[in-house]
Image (tube, helix red, strand yellow):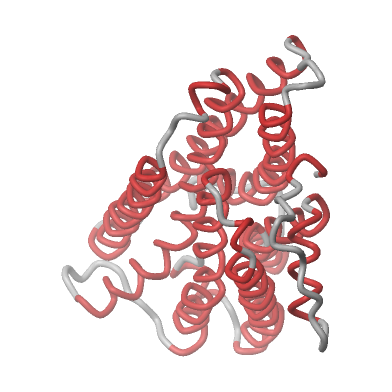
Length: 301
């Protein structure tokens, strides 16, 4: 989220420099997540209960590049959204749709960590969960993101300042807390309860949890600097930093924050053998049809 204050302090030359960094990043986000979605779409055996939330996360990340990116570029370079004038629907819509997709991505990360926690602690009960429950979780994640983005948009227009920053940083830190606690319990459980060799499906779930743990750790590293940035009041002076240094740090944190939407498909490509095969088929001129009976190799991650 690029604030209006950042927009005002940038010179035309600085805007061009940071747009030259942000626009390619948004393009990469769209391309890599589109490939991920196509890979899941082409292979039916990649679309199972354990990957529904992953697919939803990928959709949210794709929309970060396809929708949030252009809107952020618009507010940074082409237009200024001046706060303090309640209430204008155009600015409200721009801010809401600029915020909803990153917030949906973070909400999905939290839901995935909780789903993996349940799968680790109650593996056999987890196998009995029906598909409709996952669809409810997905709908809930988007409703939460819509509610939060709407509230933050209203605050930014009507009462910008400490309240907005407190709400944004609280959301980021809550996400960080959920992810940290969930995967700490998962890691402890996997170490304290080694599985017998015949527990194939349970072992597969735990290895999927490990893959998603890596995704989550990298996501935390990209989200946390933005949470810290927003938690610092604007009027607080940090050392003797120059204006250029502060602007550089601020936009570096923003670039890192949006890099979160690139992390997920890269980890899938490294960790999931069947996903790598699907991506190779999308990029090769001649696709090789896999046998229908070949099962998804989540256990090979």
